[in-house]
Image (cartoon, rainbow, N blue to C red; front, side, top):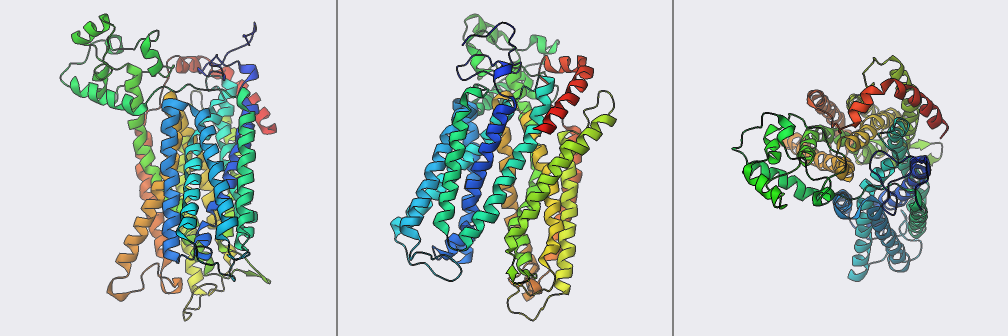
Length: 603
């Protein structure tokens, strides 16, 4: 289908399914974006339908002890995040985001189907076992192997899919177009909301069925959700916009380092970029470029030597035999600089992820030691995470519809208003408040606890609903930190590394789990010296969990100070042509953005 006269092409270099330039009117935008949001919600529902109660399945059905089950779940969760790097690498290097999402979703469905079949046919014996009352029988090595094969297929499928679906969704909006640029920013908020709504259904409805021993039903529901999500994703194929893969980013990164090292003794040219290699946009190097050139920066000047043209390089150019391990285009050098500038910001997000992981561990243990009864109904401590999810939904609405419009009205000319870096800083501040709130609640829980009990579950008369503020504060901080982080890494990574940027967000969570485990181990070892029960003993009534929460608040405060310094040092990426055009059209963009906000409010 040829382009009709008067049809406008996108400005960011996206193409349609057949490799032709995308036509703005019949591709991408919210039609494709909503399909991807629904797909994300269904996939998240399916994943957490397995993950939320996996530790209970291991203890009740496979008869593992608590320590082994917890370690196995930690290994499985960590594997998911490792596979996110695999998916990002394949996407940026060879397959592209759409193909990577499709392939890993198929693997995800196969893993869920295998888990559902093996559970129904082999693992749930006798029928109805796996609740709190009826124990399950023993299992053969073949059945156990089938189970682990299934859950690690799920980890591979979901891990490889997750960083790419967020980036593919953002690709549906042309950031160089004022209206679509605003919609692209809004997309990340709705994406995180879809993720949380999917997990909310898993934590409540599916979690209830599985807790009652209806494991096969819960797993089949997850499988059905993943299949519907995959079909919906494939239906949207003709509407999507695509960025073509740009080659192996690892080799491009290494080429710059090697070339700069080889030319370490070369003196800087007098005229800057004019005497540096820009690449052959018409020749064979075009496939190695991202399509949009990055403005040259002065940071990490040592790396610029990779683009300096020496006499030997001139001879190679004449023979059309440029050695990429000796001479790299400026844009390739700037790609490496972008990644190096991102690293300090990324490192500062890890401590926040340590705070975030407490919801799935110490918050639950704290809740179990409180009064969980409402009349004759007992509230599962893990279900308090619903306050976190509801808080995420509320604060996404407040930010998009109240805070951001107000901030934009009062911003000065030339100012960008509330940036992603500002929002991530606000997220850290709220995280500090959340940990202080959790510590205060623990102080009062201990005040009303029966310290003579041998088991601390339900031993305090303080209601579990006093945990609602700390969960809600974590939810509010997520909106500022994780949504801001998604936007930031997507905007600040080169076109050929967008999926890697999304994978950095998942790796932040993974490192947060690791650091949290290490921190707990250190605290337990230090605080249990001289035969003391320590801060986090098995019976929380004999410990001081409040001190651990206050320690996290102090560490997050220190991290906030470091983050502010890194954020002030950070220089954002600039693309040639885009920033100059933006400066000339700020007034027009403000008017168009107001119109777009009104449209988005109806979506």
